[in-house]
Structure formats: C-alpha cells, structure tokens
Image 1 (cartoon, rainbow, N blue to C red):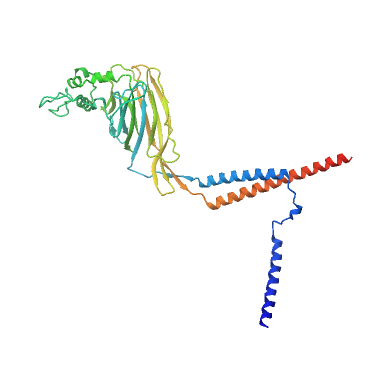
Image 2 (cartoon, rainbow, N blue to C red):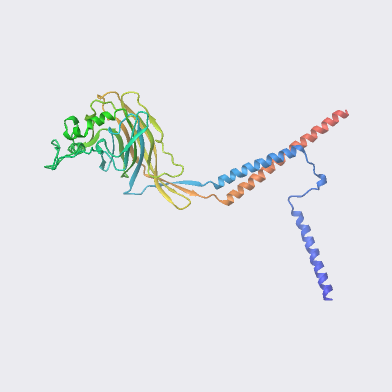
Length: 393
C-alpha cells in the first residue's frame, strides 16, 4: 500500500509540474518557428554577415573606451603658500655664443638670481649646430693652469669691497666689478684677463651657438627669467647687463625653445612654448613671453599625486635695428600665477556601464538588421509576384 501511495503522489506532482511548465510557455517572448517554415535567403545572409562585423567593431570600440582611464577635472582656489616653483628649460641659440649669454631670474618679492650657473648647463655649438663641448658657468670658468708667484695679490682695479682684497683671476675682477655696479669695458687693460686670454676666447667663440638647459628654483610668486647677453648686476636698484666687453656687436637672439615647463610632467600635459622657433635675419630683438601659470594636481589610479603647473602664453617682439633703440636684446619670460587650481583625477569606468553599452550594441544592431532584412525580403517577394503576373498576362 505504501508503494502504491508513493506512486500516486509522485504521479500527481509530475502532472502539476507539467501544467506549470505549460503555463510558463505563454510568457516566451521569443517563439520559435519550425525549420520547415524558415526561408533562408542570400540577402539575409549578407545582412547577417555585415551585422556580425559591425557588432564586433562596435564591441572592441566599447571595450577600448572602457579600458581607457577617465580623467575628471575640478577647479579649486589655490591656498598653497611658501612653495618653490621649478622652471625647466632647454633653449638653443644658433648664433649666440655661450660666453655672451647669461641667465637671470627675479621676482616681485625682491629676490634676484644673477648669472645663474647652479643646475644650468651651456653646450657650445658650431655653426652647423653640432656640439663642441659642455661648460657649466661662464667663459672664464676654465682658468688656464698658470703658476702665480708666492704671495701674489692681484689688483681689483678700484672695485675692492674690502681693503686688501685680492683679484687673482679675470673672473674675480669681473665679479668685483659686478658687485660694485661697474661696467667691465676694457679687458685688454686688465692684467689677469690678458694673462688668461679672455679677449682671445671671446673672438674664438664668435660665430658659435649655445644650448642652455637645466632648471631654476624660484619663489612661487610673479616674476621673470631671461636669457640676455652680458654679465648682469644691480646698479641703483636697476637690473643692468654689461655689454661693454662685446664692443658694438649686434646680438642675434634667434632661438629654438626645445622645452620650457613649470614643474613635473603628467599624462596629457601640453606646454605651448615647446617647439617655438624664432629667426632673425638681421639686427637684434627683444622677445617677451607673457606666461599665465595654473597650479595643477594630478591624482592617478595608483594613488600617486603630482603637484605641477600648466600655463598659457602670449608673446611680443620688439626689433632693435641699432644701439640707439631702447631695450635689451634677449629672450624674456614674464610669468604670473593664477589663483585657481585645477585638479585632474583618474577614475576607472563602471563595468555595469560597459555591459549596458555592449547589450545596447548587440540588441540595436540585430533589431535594425532584422528590419532591413524584412524590408529586402518583402520587397523581393512583391517584385517577384509582379513579374509572375506580368508573364501570365
């Protein structure tokens, strides 16, 4: 009896399940037709192949978009204080010798960096632009190996800052003149410069070019840095360049800016001065670049944060055809800082968004392909029937 009861119970359960499955079939949104009623056509095959290729192309496009990092910009008020600004530079002067040009920096806080040679390098170039050698500092940085008499104390020619000061090299005489605010006009009358061949070195480097590269650290306030001929010094609160050693030479300040940036590099940064080329056929000029620096923070996906800067630039050129026109020949970069900071944050795109896009691509292509295939099939059937009726008549 127990076995009979179990059999009857199982048979009832099976019947109920079959009825449940039969009712669920009414919810099938994709009813199937028998293979005998399916018609395969050449146009349908062509539409299917094109649809498959289109789906693959759109899928890989969506995949590459998903794998690419999304960068979101934000704007803030810059509240940082007391920081230093790093200025990276690489500028080539094809017709200005290294012994002529000096690099100076100054800012509105009153700090002056004159004739900078710390972290600044000068590469001498021949007229064809090939490297001759790298020197750090000035022309007279390399002093010939000359044995001086014991107890020798060279004259500073009246520019002594303290009594009994000695100037044993041409560089020391020029530095004493600079501190005194005097122009260095007669190297041929200075014993130390004659001994070291200062004037001969100037003549030797005529026709050469110079590549200046390195970096400066300045206060994070408005200021300027410039490349100009002559040794610089302060005279009565004025910034002056001593051009006397070069007599009446016209300075060709044609230049190529290989790189000028403020701070570290980050993905996608554009430095608008990179690759700028300025050429002078005759005379000299005063090139001014007015830079607006925008403090920038870049936060990457791996958690690293880069504090750097972007900038925009405008320029002005004043031609100096002779010495009577006012202005110092050279390249001047005047910079100011924006009070607004930009923050870029890398974010990974949502996988749900990627999945939604893929489903939309597949569904949309198949739907449109079905409509096109149906139009082609029905049009061909109608055209075929018309042709048959025409033959019959």
